[in-house]
Amino acid sequence: MSLRRFLRLFAHVQMLPILESGEETLVGGQAVMEGVMMRAPHSYCVAVRKPSGEIVSEEMPVERLSEKYPWLKYPLMRGLGTLGQAMSLGVRALKFSANAALDDGAPEKDKPTEVTNWMMAVQVIFSVVFFLVVYKLIPLKLTETLSHWQPAIKGQIAFNAVDGVIRLAIFIGFMLLISRAKDIRRVFEFHGAEHKVVFNFESGKPVTVENAQQFVTWHPRCGTSFMFVIMLLSTVVYMVIPAPTFTAKVMERIVMLPVITGLSYELIRFAAKRRGSFLALLTAPGLWTQRITTKPPSDEQTAVAIEALNGAMALEAKQGGELVIA
Image: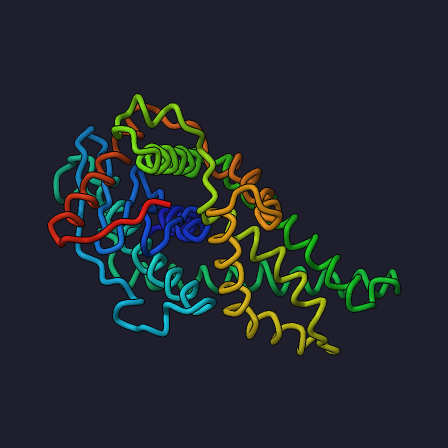
C-alpha cells in the first residue's frame, strides 16, 4: 500500500467515531468513502457509488448484542456494546467502500491492491494510538508545561480545565484542518446525506430525495456530538478524581475512558429523546460542531443514503425485526 493511500485510509478510519450514529432500537448510519452505511436493529447495508456511477451495496444480518449478552442492556454497559459494534460495522463498511470507490473499471492488472482485513487492522491500531497520543498525552503534557510557567494552574480543577480546553481545541482544529481535504469534504457531504435521510425516515414521510433534502444535516444521535460530550464529561471526571503524578494522570485517562464513554452515551441518549431538557443543552455544542462534519449533500449523494436505508430496512423486514422510532 502506497503512503498516500495509507494516509487517505487513515483519515477515514480516524473519522469513524465522529461519523458514526445509531442505537440498537433505532435506525442509524455512517458515512464512508463515496457512500453511506445504514443499520437497523437486526440488519446492515452499505451503499457506495462507484466511479462509473453505478451504486453497489452489501448487506447482512446483524445480531443485537443486548440479545446475546443481556448485561449489555444496562446503563453504561449498553453504550460500550453499541459503540463497539458500531465501530466494528464501520470498519467493515469502510473496507467495502474503499474497494468499491477504487474500482474504476480499469483492467485487472492496473487496479490498485484491494484493501484487506489486515490492512484495516493496522489502520485501527494506528488510529487508536493516534487518539491516545493526540487527545490524551499531548494535552496533558502541554498543561503540565504551562503549570510550570503559571503556578495557579497546578490546582486540580484549574489543571484539568486547561487540559480540557486544549483537548477541545485540538479536536476542533483537527476537524477544521482535515475538512479542507477533498476526500474528507465528500465524506462530510455523505454524512449530511445520512442525517437527512434518517430525519426523513423518523418523520414518517415517504423517504425520497426531495423529502430528505428538506431536513437539516445535524442530528442529536451523531458521533460528532458523542465525541464532544466525551471530552466535556472527561474534563469534569478528571477534576473530581485526584491523580497526583503525571503517570497517574495518564493511567486515569486510559482506565476511565470506558466509564466516560458509557456515561456520554447515556447523556446523548437522554438528550435525543428530551430535546428541551437542561441536559440537552449540554449536547448543543456537539450539534454546533456538526456544522464542520456535515455538509449539504447533492441529490446523487442523498440517493445513495436512501439506497443504504432501503437495503437495511428490506433485510430487517425479512427477519421480522421490530423497529422503534424515537
